Length: 314
Image (cartoon, rainbow, N blue to C red; front, side, top):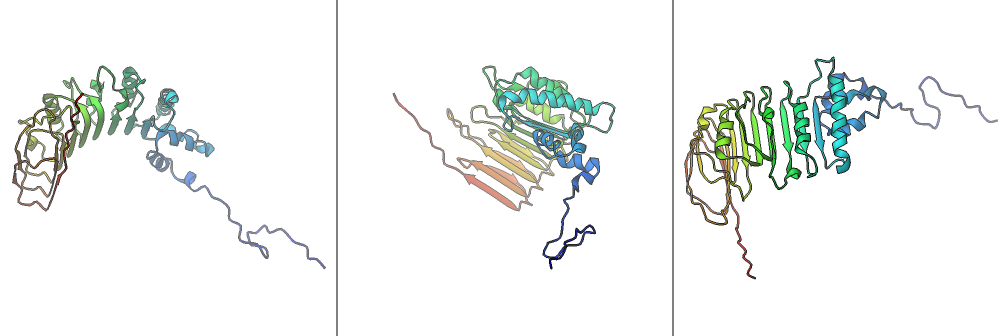
């Protein structure tokens, strides 16, 4: 006689069947500030897509403390409208909510069709009192007039601690106010030596400085740059510089890279007076005379690469 099967309602398993496992949405049970922190590590396009997974997440991205826009992650013809709509909804999320702030703003543009006035407006939206990290790569905006010029208000942020710029231009810095800046990174930034000198001098809390330039526009490190005025500075990197004269009591890491001038070789001496330096790296096609006073040096990396000059005759 066949046995009548009964339904199991108490969570136990029937004969011949495995345990029933119910899927649990554990992430949604986390506090909102924890979810905001998790979403802040994602590009904004992914954070917006995550809002489709749950009804309670629908407007969660309105209040995340980081905005990251990269036109490599979205079609170029849709990028402008996407950024505009995101900033519009982000503004809605900040209304009446004093805890909703923008702490990090990242922008990467590879499309030359993006107008500089549009970028100025986007940066103006992000340049708020609680902004701590500003990262801008405007490589795609290079045109006949040169690199995109960073607006003045982006250098007047008292809460900013990290400033990373790439493929840009700096001109007027008459109103620089970066008292909290700890990390500065300039890669292929068109800036005169005097302007760079004045900018660095207005960052008293600087701990890490990275300067990289291309072969056609080598940065000349100002000989009168008194980095000893920055007692917190521990890491210094200069790539593409001619003149090097480093004197600092507390500097621990120093990286130098000297490129060859195609027209006329510039011979220079590297002078380093850093008694607490523990790591030194030098990359170039030739080994220049290096005068060092670093008794605590523990690690030295010197890389000499081949330089080939090719000429074509017609």
